[in-house]
Image (cartoon, rainbow, N blue to C red):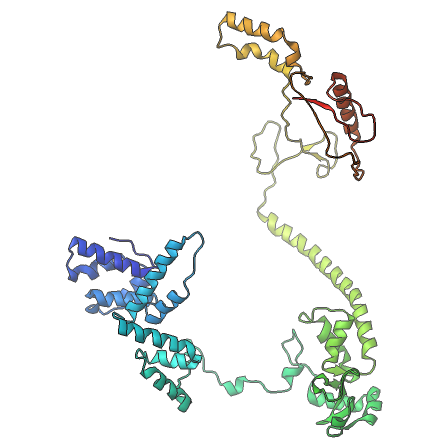
Length: 488
């Protein structure tokens, strides 16, 4: 039996039919054999079938494929949206594309050229019409090309014939009255960001405060009607009892209406609320003076708005410092609570010298005589492998020649001892292979000075002196790069 895979149910049925015909299994037993291998949504679809229908292999196959989207439109989308996967060869892509196309035609019951022509024309026609017409044709399962344009005309002549998608509420959900749930009051505009209750900034309160505010007395004297404001580029006017300001950049022509801004004149009582809404709320972003002022002037205006915004933003830094201090105090208290909760199941234990304990973390060594064990910890460095020197290796040479006879071992030791120059700890100079180092040009190399560790200076001086001693290098006669001899 092939193994059922939920990602490709079609392949399972194709493989099963090949095996069933090869094994000559009776057709009446195919449904029983298949249901024993089903899993996931396929098993649920089989259990939902009528007992009489469930024994029919074709009905079982149709129900399982429908559970995994085995409809013509699903195969159509798989064929059109097929992409190459990571690590997949182009031969595999071509094979999957061919299988997807064959399954699409099989689901559409296309078996000859004329049916294929009708099928492709209808599919291309759906791609050329609006979305609502495409849905209208798909709902009626139109497969005949000649009738598709005529049916599409029904949408134009009778647009009400297109049934909108039904919204099915969840089981047990209470009925919702859309007219009562839609809020059309002025509180929608005046509600401050981050608050659950409507603000007192309503239209009636705005009109009342505009008439009572003494700082707006000069603007009321200059106010004109809404009709008269159409003839001026900037000014103050009254619209439905609300004092408004019309403003337009001076460098723009008066006939360009898209530059005109209509601003609500804000009374003194609401200045703080507008600035807080434009700067201090989480959605405002705490911008600078220029951007905050530009945001306010898009819809609001009051005398001395620039100075008030500058002062508000400047004092915000001090308010942030106070908020930071409050956060630090709260964290200090939370730290004690977290420690008490963490140490709730901790057990105090003491150990004596020689007790065996289990170490789960790297442990430092407490320096002797230190009073504070938390600050005087010394972690030993990682062991560094020592450099193997020839002198030490020669001392251990006798042990490494234990596989030789006594005479052979003695010959090797005498041979090594007769050539001490070859086995020194420091390399020497040999005349067997010598070459000259020639520079590409005689120009001096300019390099920025870098600090050199003091402990390295002595080491470099010793190395240079040793190379001069053995003749590996020679002192330069000029300040230009020199050509020295190197041993190979």
